[in-house]
Amino acid sequence: MPDPTAVAVQLERLRGTVEAGFARADGSLALLVQRSDQTDKQLADHEQRLDALERSRWPLASVGALAALATAAVTAWQLTAR
Image 1 (cartoon, rainbow, N blue to C red):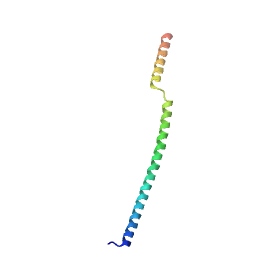
Image 2: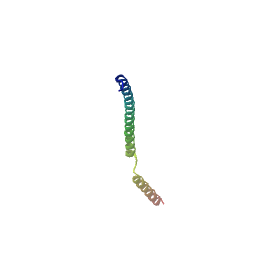
Image 3: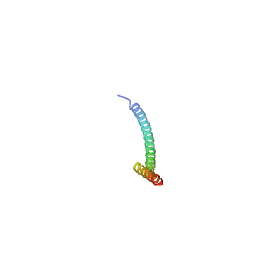
């Protein structure tokens, strides 16, 4: 039969090992949560910047229509100037 004192010592060592492991895992999880929060903030910032760019750009169809209108106006002006 094992010595109860030896069993208690081994259980205490095991408890310390488990606590250290949990502390490492907890620290790693905290770091992952922090990085996730930073990524979320960066993603939100990029979304805002992209939305601002999309609002400020001219649609390609509008640019094409303006170019066609300008070409027609210049052509009409040249025809009437002769």
